[in-house]
Amino acid sequence: MKKITNIFSWIILALVIVYLAYQKGYILKNFEHISVKDAFVTMSTDANITLIDVRTSAEIQSDGKIKNSILTPLQLLEQNIDKLEKYKNTKIFIYCRSGNRSITASRILSDAGFKTYNIQGGINKWKKEKLPHL
Image 1 (tube, rainbow, N blue to C red):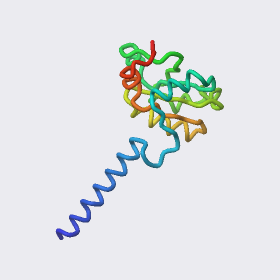
Image 2 (cartoon, rainbow, N blue to C red):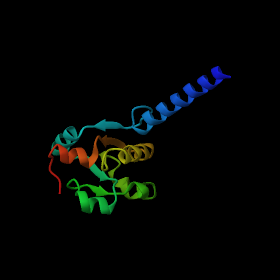
Image 3 (cartoon, one colour):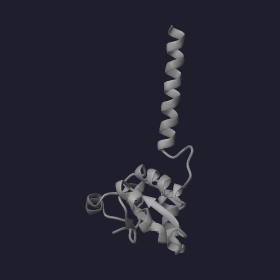
Image 4 (cartoon, rainbow, N blue to C red):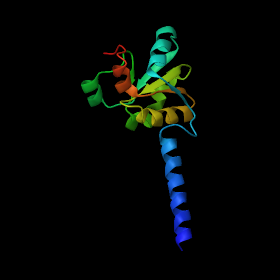
């Protein structure tokens, strides 16, 4: 009986690890990751980029936002995909506070046919690197 319990424990542990790796965008991803510095440089030189902020309005009021970003909170993203259709031929850079919700948003938009890039670390990392924002 102990052997079965150990096997079951290892299976559960493996499933948890796979789930966490998926949630962090390390496996089974259909989008790219980009660092805040690379995102900033690319946005400075490439006009074919759309920047989407998936935080809430309250977070923007308290933390600011990256210039020219479009607010589309994650909880409203799926129901507002049609409003983003005009940006489908651009590279979509997505950010949130720390980089977790933007992974979910990147998956959603990528599944809808957008070319998405998750900005790793979100606005927190952006501000830590002292990159310009509002």
